[in-house]
Image (tube, rainbow, N blue to C red; front, side, top):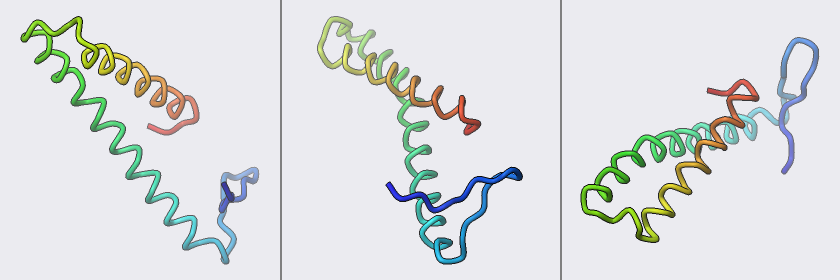
Length: 84
């Protein structure tokens, strides 16, 4: 992956030739992070519905729990890097 920003003592800057590409990547990241957060917010309701139906032992339930843990790890990684 090409880097479009340059880190310096004061933070980051984008060289003039990379501005549009940097904006596009930031927008793509914002979309992906928003999708991750929305997915994570829906999982508890999905799990509750499956519990109410007695489906705690199904593969789908276990996969959903695993997805919740994976999402949480990704979110914690981004928080560690100052992104919330």
